[in-house]
Image 1 (cartoon, rainbow, N blue to C red):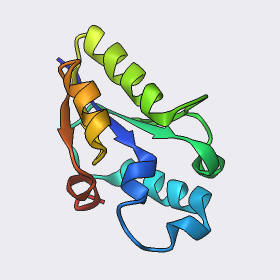
Image 2: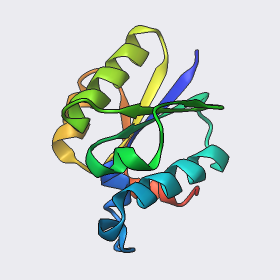
Image 3: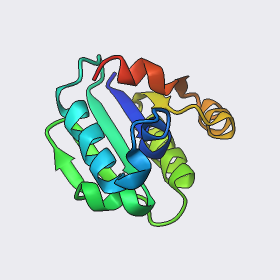
Length: 122
């Protein structure tokens, strides 16, 4: 069984007061770069970007990181990606601190982890 980590980029980036609000695209790029070398047990990482963060990383696949640009709500895109991975038989984990989003993906059978877990691995 494959394992997929879906990352709520806006939530992860926003969890650290490091000036991300001055350069959302740059913050998204730094997160992507960190994910490329992160020590995680996942076969695939799906990085969901929304808003100004989309300007930092092109959509597509780089090794095991698949970057997705949300067309609308980032939360809706995260739920859709988690659902698709679960329906494909993957074990799914979503990284977010958003309680409502956590509830939505847990209803699909996904596990959730907070941003600190991921940031500790970057």
